[in-house]
Image 1 (cartoon, rainbow, N blue to C red):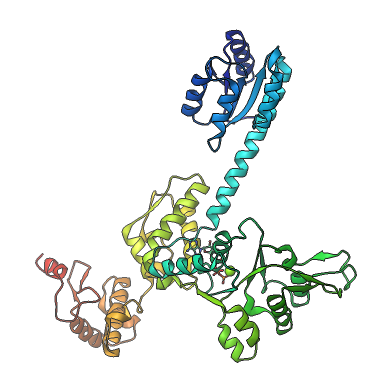
Image 2: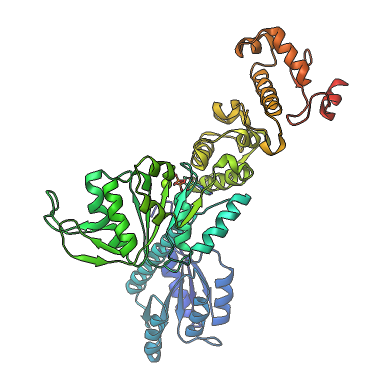
Length: 484
Ligand SMILES: Nc1ncnc2c1ncn2[C@@H]1O[C@H](COP(=O)(O)OP(=O)(O)OP(=O)(O)O)[C@@H](O)[C@H]1O
Ligand SMILES: [Mg+2]
């Protein structure tokens, strides 16, 4: 019990003697004691007290009686545990109260040992309940799908539209884009939400085990099958099965999966019996299934059977506008998880993160944020704190193709960005930069002139029009600095 916060207990009784004796017992035992003399006062105290763990409540009270107080309390979520105190004539009511959610009841006259035992049990129960609620909240949080980008809005629309149906969904998209979150979100918004969501990672299960994993096996079906086993499809009966990495499934297993999809039938390995199952199938892959199909690695019929509702999980570099939101979200989560003050990211750190290409998508971003939250001391994470590859990333793909008409325009924009980035990396030293990009110094000078990039001696800064401005149009920024 060392270093623990004192449990807060409210005693509600109109008899002053009872309150006094309970105060003595409870404070002696190291609890924090609060009291109220009637039902209304009790409700006020309950409303006002933060972190109240337990209420010891007399059945018979002036004004609102104990049962009424209990009923009021139960209207709210996360209420403390309640122990009723009953006098001679109120035992029946106290028993009634336990049916309404009171933890237990104590009979007057109160006995110290019995009181303490009952209180300790109630507190234990309350602690477990809270832990359970916390865990549930954490679990829900873990699967939250964040994003405001139009591509995410479109995805949500599609998800919500298919969720209540039984249609098979195929989620495709690069690794780390959140395909698992999408699958869970569909299940959570479906009519099967109270049934199981069973996930099978088809790539992680060895070929010789996958059938028994999916369909189960009979005892003795093969060496090592010492017990009868229920397959994932049967476990998911009534609910949803998520076949992750379906592109990695062998042709043989594919044909069996097809049968479940078409007939709703499963057959255990080593059994001749066929069982009907009612399972919603969601599959995901980061492979190009169409190509796999053309190359003969994926059954065409299964592809069409899965591809009823294809949902695309966008790459992070397609929804860069969501990066600040995701950074803030992960930063808050990891700070909370580690009991840190929430850290912020500076503007240029966020800008660098927006420019970076995130080949590992949200998973990579999430890991970077976690590392930064743990490894950075300061409250604000600056660009200098970011991993090298993000700080240095030369984003030659940055120009938005919608704004560019010709190849020449694209090449020039990319070239200019590249030169600027390299100059910056080399502290605006032209000879060094020329060496690094393997071009003669004279050529680099020519390029600088062509793109209107000026480097002022002693300032250590280049003055250049912003990347989307055309050559020849000086930016207001460059004029300002010229004048210095
Ligand atoms: N939009 C998002 N909002 C919040 N977290 C996200 C989002 N997208 C991805 N994540 C997080 O990124 C990580 C990777 O997501 P997930 O496992 O769903 O990716 P995936 O597409 O299934 O990748 P893979 O193909 O490698 O299995 C997870 O920790 C997930 O919580
Ligand atoms: Mg996945």
